Image (cartoon, rainbow, N blue to C red; front, side, top):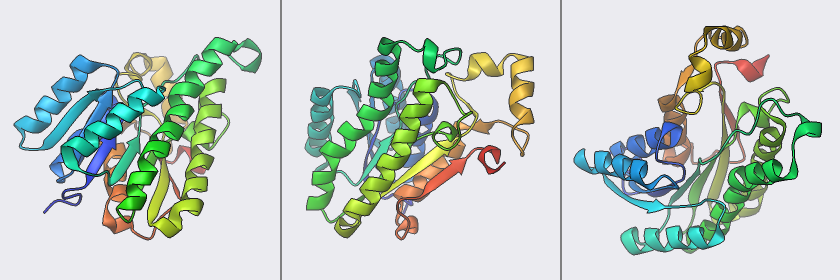
Length: 252
């Protein structure tokens, strides 16, 4: 049996990068995956790969900032698998690294907050009642080192990821009696399609590596492994925790 055998898991932002890695690893560990993303074609490729490898998965086109879309995801999960045991709030965008507080306009601020933070609220709002009915579950929110330190990302991105960190702790405290655990993961520099343009520039890569004690960039699977642990029963006594997967960056 896998470490996540028969655990019904919603994973947002599953069409590429960390989300795709999480979806594939969860399916390999026996989870029943509800993969969601706004990029429907790429999402279908991930679902197809999972099914080709004898995994169980469905794909749902999903704007994570839409409550109506979250209702559709919830219903799709219940129709296909009957419950939700795990929620991985992974979807997110970075924002503009060149814009400090005084240069960030309201439109950009709201877009980042909606996709990175409002989406997490909508996800837990829809899923927690299901978990309460079925005696618990595990919620894993993907934050960032920018949710731990002030130099980890753009202004709006840092605000959103800091919000995810404390939202996680609030859920952990309030829903612990319902056997619902909630933890956050804080990735550092990870090789994904989103980071590829920057990592391909030697000067930028060298500067990044200077700030990472392990002196190399992480893989999407590094985040997926952390998600597997926090979603599994192996972490049954862990809630409200923040796990930095950053090569030691935030330890400095």
